[in-house]
Image: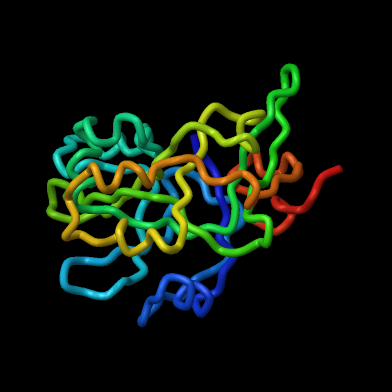
Length: 222
């Protein structure tokens, strides 16, 4: 699964990397947790790419209770095309979720050691995500998202049996194109990312508490 990640990029960096004309004010985040607000990149039909703020944990448009979102922070690549909560967003509402790294926990006896995982060169990248829009009984809309996961590569396997789907930048256009609804063109993108392009190092257990959101969460821990 993917349960925590970070995003320290500036608005300028985000705009350049994702080819966005207008951006939002952003603040560095070092320990983003489920149900919190996250930045996404979407491309509505007939429009240019844009940044959008969404709640992490997808609430399907048909949901009666928004708390279901807490159970839908991730979507499995193997079943994303068939699960009722995800099959329509896969066809119509795909997004990118910008990040510069994520956390996984290595089992060590009765405790788990957190690791920070990023690109080897430290560059910005993006998870493959889905989003949806739900309205409460008063008609207020809530936009929410989920991160798609897949089987782990060799770097992640010692920590977890799943990893987030990381999209290569040359696949952004295909993933965001709302005119493409053929899932057979999309599913091949949902594969493990090459481990040789990634790096991991242990970090402080400060990250275990989502209330801790400072650079110390990413500091190497001997």
